[in-house]
Length: 344
Image (cartoon, rainbow, N blue to C red):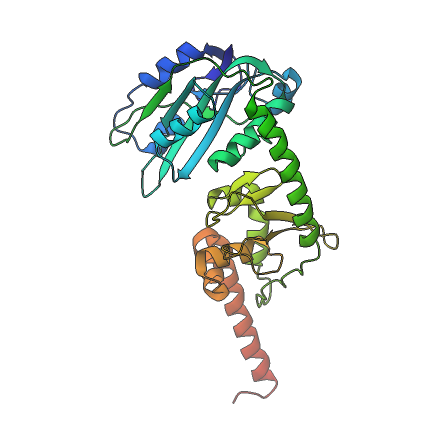
């Protein structure tokens, strides 16, 4: 069994492969990069994929359709390395590797781990996605089942890191006819049922009116810029959400069942956020746009402050343009009043 690998995420051709033993060595003896930030270290980290496909393109991987590794992304998890290992072994998974990421406990970040599970035999994307989704649910990890091309960064050492690893040495997991596969199939059925019910209910939710930004002259809408600047998926992951099938689990959720959906309006075709979670501050009973979401998450719903801060911080050139347009508008108003006899 082998896994696609490369020296960094920038590699687009001439990939190589490693086996489980070589992967174990890379985890037990990572390269020491010295005085780097964790971001710089990550950029220099080798990568690995969950397949032995010729390259890391999604189309190539799905066409190759041979997955050789199960993997998990545990970001800001409540679990430590020993409890992760205990959970794996409790599920009958004997051969595994756990290691911390470069950003583990860096700059206020929490516990961040990557998990690899050795397989006895490879299988198709359909089976891989099924098991990945179930394991992600169990560990409250991000569900990468919809992103078969997603790579993982192998560990490197750097000054000030908090590196840990743990390796389980046993028999590779034989998914076929396993209890894990049985549980994964049952989970898929139940999840599909719950999400279908929630989606149907969410479709009737009212759309929150867009916050009114008073524009004058040729001013540009900051709200429109925000709503067009991101993808919902990347935005939600950035705020600590976990993906489960068609739904997302917010960071405040006390249950494991995801109830956040991105809905496409049948009236204007725009995608909006809707949440069923009581603990979610964005669960307002309405469908929210990205500006609503950020204003609630970052500014406690203070839209005026959000608008000003986002403009000054993220759209400096547009903010300067809008200020100039505002002053031009004031000047024109003053001139018009003068010629209309409004000023002496």
